[in-house]
Length: 411
Ligand code: TYM
View 1: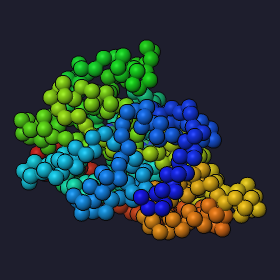
View 2 (view 1 turned 90 degrees about the vertical axis):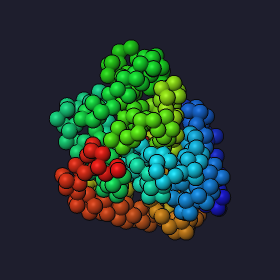
View 3 (view 1 turned 180 degrees about the vertical axis):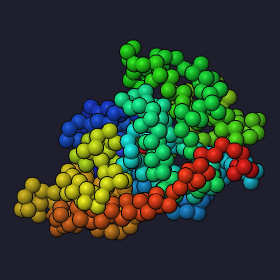
View 4 (view 1 turned 180 degrees about the horizontal axis):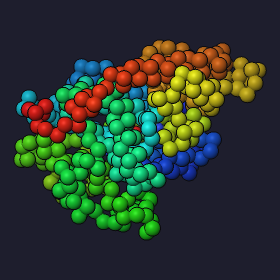
């Protein structure tokens, strides 16, 4: 463990002592005001496992690639059966992919926010590193069932969000993107098998639904579960006999875990492997580390369509961990954990030495809040500018290629 990781860890421990009540579901993330999400406790509550140093070392050894900074800094922090994926990679043969990747997005806004990039950036790194197929689900049905959105609006949002996803840079030859409203026929047999294996009370308990929830919400779990199984993609996995052997790895923030806990419980019964998971922490809201950046709360988010001026103004108004007065700041230094601009750098700044330097200077009070905000603004503007440039190149043909259900590109 390097010093930076160790110090951040210590800092987390310090805060954990003050953390008690928190809510983490796919639909809500909230810690107590003034505190932050307690990730150690979440691992305990959800029954997942922390990512170990040994797993990170092994990943580096078997792939020959330096682990991504999101992994080294503990942003991806929790997992389920990740070692099985490393085993599968080691035992791979050239004929069949050792596993496939599955992730997704619920298109509830015209544009994704910058926090949504985190699982997608990491998924791209996994795809580049392991050279495996990737499926990306757009849950337009989920957002129809949960939000006050009509299907026409959702169609536009889905296309706009698909462009955001493609702009992350996935390999078009190895990536399949689909939206549930249009693709459902292809996976409905698998969806029905899942629906038949899960009871209403299991879903209600796991997702926090009630007797007055609409029945679509209860059934939706099967839509998000189905892509964990290769039978949902007959154009990619053509040899049905192999379906019981193929593993799936899901990178996502930990809010999505409840869906996959239910899925794992029924996988073997249906003749499939349990999906493996790798979970990230949340990119925090502009207002503070006690809630996640969320597209449904415009005030909490920096959108990928925001102008430079909007980004600058949002960061300047974001929660600061600096001292209340200059005197206090110089005396006690900044609280890095509470400081949103600094936290954003932890997610996006690749240069470890520079991040460490800023952390050192700022926490000692030598660096001022405005300086840190300025660096964060420049960093995020750079990320957003690159994203917009790649997005502008996307044509209808690009989208069609990613969403094509023919077998051709998978031969
Ligand atoms: P959605 O659209 O809420 O989020 C898309 C992905 O982004 C993650 N995420 C975040 N990550 C870091 N910081 C944040 N503040 C933040 N907010 C959201 C989510 O965990 C997710 O990985 N039901 C899903 C769509 C979906 C899916 C999947 C996601 C379908 N199949 C498989 C992951 C894996 C949803 O509405 O995600």
